[in-house]
Image (cartoon, rainbow, N blue to C red; front, side, top):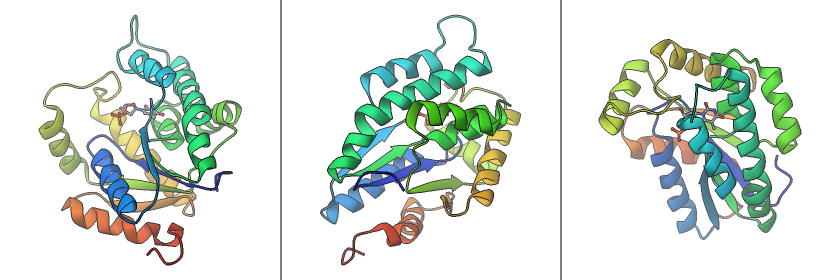
Length: 215
Ligand code: TMP
C-alpha cells in the first residue's frame, strides 16, 4: 500500500502491450465514476523527470553504461514520486502511471543484468521503496506485440525500444518472473485482443480497490 489516501495503479509490460491505451481507458472509466484521477508516465511526469527522459531515450554521447542508466531512471522516479505522485495520493486522488519501478526491475535489473537487489536499493534510497497498490502487467506473445509495435511506430524507436529482440525477450521473462514471485503485487492481463475486452479484465482485477458502492 502507498502511504497516502489515494490509490496508485501502475501499468507495466513490454513495448507494444497497449499500456497507454489501457491507462487512458481506465482513467476515463474512473472519472465517469466521479473519482479524481491523475495520469502520468515514466520516465517523466515532472519537468525534471521529463528532462531525464530525453537523456535516457536520446543519449547525448556514447550509450549510457548499464549502471548510469539505472541511476538516471531512479533519479527521474525520485523526482516524480516527490513532486507529483505523493502529493496526488495525499490529496486522495487515483494515480495511474504508465510504467514504474517494475520497469527498472525488468529492463535494467533483468535484461540489463544489474540485478534486482541493486534496483530495489536505488528505489529505497530515491523513493523510499514506494509500491503501487496494484501493478497491471499487460502480456502477450512476442509476434503479436511486435506486429502491434510496427503498426504504431514503423521503423522509429528510441535507445531502449530499439534494442535487439533477445533483450526484449529477457524483459518479458523478467516481468513474468516478478509477477509469479509477487502475485499480491501484480494482476497479469492478456493484452492481445479487443481493447474493450482487455479493459473489462482490468476493471475486474481492480474491483477490490474501488470505493464501496462504486463497483
Ligand atoms: P515508454 O516507451 O513506455 O514511454 O518507455 C520508454 C522506454 O524506457 C521503454 O523502452 C522502457 C524503458 N524503461 C526502462 O528501461 N526502465 C524504466 O524504469 C522505465 C520506466 C522505462
